[in-house]
Image (cartoon, rainbow, N blue to C red; front, side, top):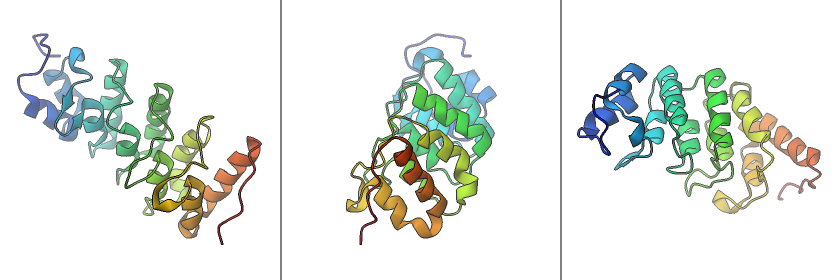
Length: 190
């Protein structure tokens, strides 16, 4: 922790660098818990930590910020986490669940990437088997709305079906989620 408790850091560059490229130990040298919801030009402290390429540091820093009460409703943190190109699915799935439990919106849409489920489903470099820990967390959410309108003029389920060549297992799981909730599964668009 820093030596002084200021309302804003004097050196936001050091804070930014620690979050995006550093380690938890480096962050703790330049960070004060009072700054947890500080908004920098490039994002919230939480979204910056979630953009760290080192997955172990990403998880450690994000959990530290969540311990300090980081606001998960600002800056689309689910999209930032799920949009990464490197993942430790086992370590990050509990972090995803923690952010959702803290109030992050499982249905929040992004104009380019859709919902968090669509964001991760569009990462075709990963198989459905790789992504299963994230699917488990997202599909278990009782507030998940697979039939809401989303990007490309389709519903979330419609987009998953459109991508079914690469996401067949996810489509089956999404349709089963609807069935389990007593929601009629709409037929695929012709």
